[in-house]
Length: 207
Ligand code: TMP
Picture 1 (cartoon, helix red, strand yellow):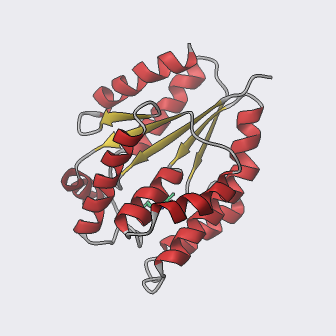
Picture 2: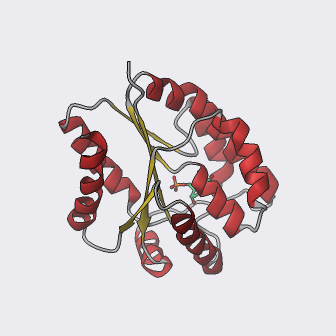
């Protein structure tokens, strides 16, 4: 059987990823594709437990290294249990966040060495890499408004605005570094207009 497709979704907190992922799923299913939806951190029983630990608002004393390693651990389990098997048997995997999130949040956001993050994650990724990544580009100010409108925030969302600004700037750098793989989508428009941009790319991918 042909290898499937591994699509990752990135953006700052409040960039509207979740709504667009659901639309992507129904669009691809409508084209007859087998789609597996998953998320990071999470997506397996073990990874969801790690997620709860990382995002617990009470865990304010968690160090950057601990945090980065926990994200990588959750990722290793998800890759082995879900992503790799699904892609190898021809399915389309859509993953809400992946290793780019570690580069921007732990790297650009927390100031950790990008090479160290890459080295650790090389083990977690076990040779897998996204075929395409959609980055939902929404300014930190608009994203903050959307987050404030939502109920309940986690430990990372509770970070100060300058952290979210560094994360956003980090995403912009990644887009320039990987122009072939990362498709920047203007996420500030209406749900329909944003999805129109996404669907244009999806059409080409599944043609
Ligand atoms: P979510 O709210 O999009 O589910 O993501 C959970 C939070 O975890 C979000 O604030 C981004 C953060 N995160 C990292 O800091 N590093 C990572 O490697 C991943 C996957 C997420």
